[in-house]
Picture (cartoon, rainbow, N blue to C red):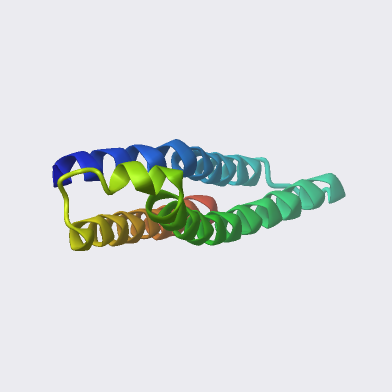
Length: 126
């Protein structure tokens, strides 16, 4: 039954956080693509700086939204109407808490790794 909890937690996190992570990687690719057309033009400077600012903002949004989503998911799944159904499963309270903690940590770790990868991609680190 714990596998089922992990499956549904993974689906809930993936449904919300994977699009944000995909947007982050797309902005990193766009930033890298802008660097390929480097010139001394003022228009290039404006586009490059704006793409870097968008990348930094998307990194911050991904981290903050991940934490907020973890907290709200914990509350909704355990203390609202959804929690009533969750506690009808044949799983202990400790297993519920462990599932929530592991999935929140896993998706936070995935987000941090994607932030590092997107920063490396955007800045041409090898």
